[in-house]
Image: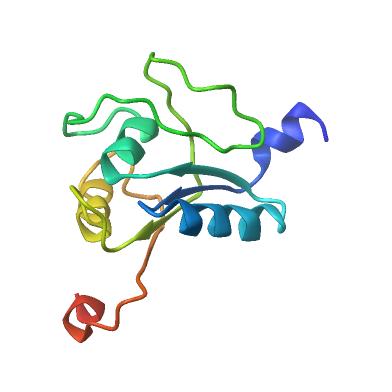
Length: 127
């Protein structure tokens, strides 16, 4: 695969506080030749996505699992993603809160967001 092929691949950002769920999502998407980066919180996802209308509350580096990414550094690292998949129920910032922040940002609002949950709560599903 050439560098151009790696840069043009569909890139998914998976956000989940469960390492098992992150690894499962990563394995499934990589088997379809998607580039995948995983983080364990909404704040780390926002930090990784780069400049936005609101400031970052969490400055810790993300744990990247991208097949073409370099190792994380303390410097601010930004990525371009094609899709965000996030768990609904996470400590600190829920997947719904992450969705609101992404859609409220002029630079991120066009990124599709999929929220997943193993809970069957009709009010959350309607939301």
